Image (cartoon, rainbow, N blue to C red; front, side, top):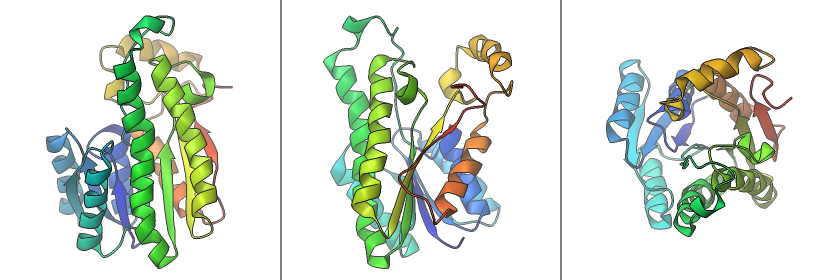
Length: 243
């Protein structure tokens, strides 16, 4: 691959798996984090000790100034930024019917990170990608954005917005920058902490009878990044969960 990649929320779960997979395909990887410093450093260490190249960059993606500075650092270190994986996201676990619990603060927190954060990162990275007349962005969506059901109503709506953002960015950044969205179903990450039994019960009911691993999603994200004849697509990978 031989390119420079930035992965937001790269310290854990899908983000970590994407960083490792990209490095394995020859990319230099910038591992972004906001709070998970130790995990991000561990991700970079695993890559560097395996002969790859990785750096760690702190930034809160909901803050445009921090995002722009982060992308500048990546370009200074790697010479360019060719690939962006918008993985950073947060949620709040709220029963769907409890509308009063979906406070203004929670709406703002989730939208600031999950939607505006992805836009800020895409905008900052695209400025450099345009100079090279090439680049690829993958946003992480969720089946919650398709079904309307998820960890909370604001989370589901924020992910539906990510799907729409993807299509708008694909139009705005063509022809040189490709933008698509990978939409996972249930994935065995720390988001399931405390609900492992629920996850175990879900697996047998899926058509493929398995919960996706972070590595499953990472492999697919990398394939999408490398596919030069595709943009603006919202692609589900969920073991048949939404069939």
